[in-house]
Amino acid sequence: MNQERDTQTPLASARAEIARQKMLSAALDVFGRYGFDGASTRQLTEAAGVNLQAIPYYFGSKEGLYIATAEYLMARIDTHVGDMRARIGTHLMTLDAAGKSLSEAEARRFLTEILQTMVTLFVGKESESWARFLVREQMEPTEAFARVYQGIMRPMIEMGRRLIGVILREDPASEHVRLRTFTLIGSILVFRVTHAAVLAQMEWDAVGAEQVEILRGLAAELVDVLGPSKAGAA
Amino acid sequence: MNQERDTQTPLASARAEIARQKMLSAALDVFGRYGFDGASTRQLTEAAGVNLQAIPYYFGSKEGLYIATAEYLMARIDTHVGDMRARIGTHLMTLDAAGKSLSEAEARRFLTEILQTMVTLFVGKESESWARFLVREQMEPTEAFARVYQGIMRPMIEMGRRLIGVILREDPASEHVRLRTFTLIGSILVFRVTHAAVLAQMEWDAVGAEQVEILRGLAAELVDVLGPSKAGAA
DNA sequence: AAAAACATATCAATCGATTGACTTATTACG
DNA sequence: CGTAATAAGTCAATCGATTGATATGTTTTT
Image: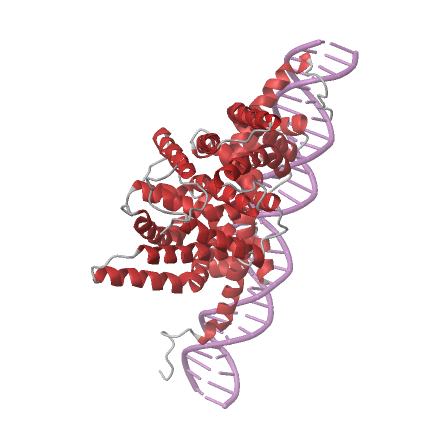
């Protein structure tokens, strides 16, 4: 079995590339919906419109397809958040190089942007299976966890830590800032994880564009009420 | 008719009750760890030390065992949170009957208690499989979801809504209070759902007693910083 | 022709469930 | 009381269906 494509995409694989793409696209949906064990190879290939044999042929095994799907997912997500991440990251590095510090207002603006992107990406309907893929991978890490964590979670979390550190006026590396970073993530993630309970409690039929807009507003509010512990609290 | 049999547990079922108990206890762990599809009947019966046939005999089917396990879980949880829930619930009803309203300080105290209970129940290690059972049931509802939601989630959420309504000085039924209730839940739940990422970011080896204490402190802080939108924010 | 891509027909393993025989406990009856 | 009849509980053996993977043949491209 030789499906190595080390340096270049051979012209011969024009057909193959289409098949791979179809399979990855379908696998992202099927794996996201049913998980690794829950998704059968028949299901995966039928959803992609390819033969059962295509899995061992192109990806070696079911597990190979899964790992490839995880990387495909990260690439897809990067097309959605890559710009924002690069922009904020560059801004932070520019400040570092100039020896200047991030203003609180800027930090709030960036943090709001990140959380609102999380809403769109995690709670929205069109990316439902993606989100389930990621949540599942967090809760029960598989072989692909390290890649997903390093590629998506970690950079986002550490960027969030820095921003929250500025807003709370604390060390971004402190335990407290790390904890508060996770609480903010959880504040959004809960609308995906407890999806059924959310629909029941909010009296929503589904999470459509209208609901996403409400949650984006909520994300902005969460950043607004975030602040250093004030002495003058009753 | 010298001996009543109908009201009390029949002497005949003493053995059966032991077997059922063993099976439910083992099933709670196995289902929690691997999910419904992931747990095999062999696994379930071997963990309980009973024969494969015990599942159809006592619970009709694997699904019957699963539903029974969900109800068993709720009973177990009730032994942990039942007292608190009853105490707060009674207090609220007493106030209602007297036409009095809940003070903000009391609301904060109760809410902190609820969140800290969530920490112990969801994040602690000894109840890890329980928590995973519940989280899984939320994310991919099965036949047992309605029971779990009605029995555990809903009463807790609606009690939280009432308390948060007092603190935010808003209508507990409003959309905003509902949203903020979920964000609080998510702030704790995230430490279970993104467990692997939490360990990596917090540089923890595991979530033991020490970490639970830290998270209980975080829960208290989250209630502290909760308040009606203040005008004097810079 | 040679390689790449696709398809058919299986494989052994495991799934949940069922069968029917077996042991133990409870009830019925003399 | 004692003992046979009945029910309750346990067990190994096995069912058809499905799982991921493979062996091998066919078509397409170079």
